[in-house]
Length: 237
Image (tube, rainbow, N blue to C red; front, side):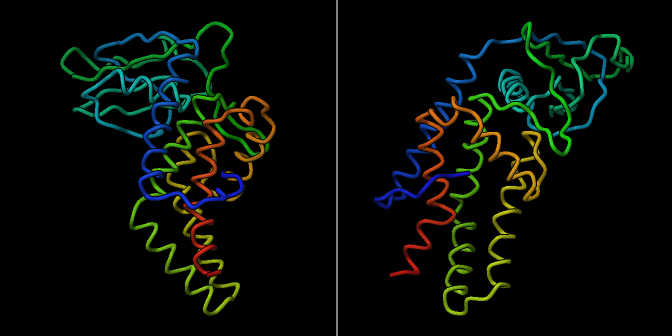
């Protein structure tokens, strides 16, 4: 998900600044895209698989998150929001009434006119990738790859591979990368597999707008540095 590593090694402070800049760019891109409308239905719940859940103390944040990852709506129950994926936009008629005494509410998202509804992932196809969705995905990858625990584990694996270069050592390192990315990719409609990674890369490479984005390029350079560039430079020294 990155490009060629930076020619000059970024410091930890520069990586932190990049993550902050990436968050701002993702929020700006999301705000600039045409907004849909939200409707809340108290005492109702909706169909669809739970894609993820998050605290429901700030519903505006939940709505922005749902829009970014292509959800049709979310249920609010006992302080948590459960984001739903469905093949089409929902209507009130699709919801289930749970009774006046049941404190659940379902929020339906109606995309702007002309926008495609979110669709489940199938092999050979995938969700469309707007700039806002790509930037949001890159923010999540930057955050998980920059975690000290991940960096320590990856450093240990690179050192072991450098001391004794075997295919099994490389397989362990690649499995760590896949499992870490796999915690993020399904939230954007991609499989937690190398097929999902390749599918995402193919969609990004086929989009002139994404390839021309300075924000996408900057994020990609730092992602590549975090998972490859800094360790290859260290082991080559």
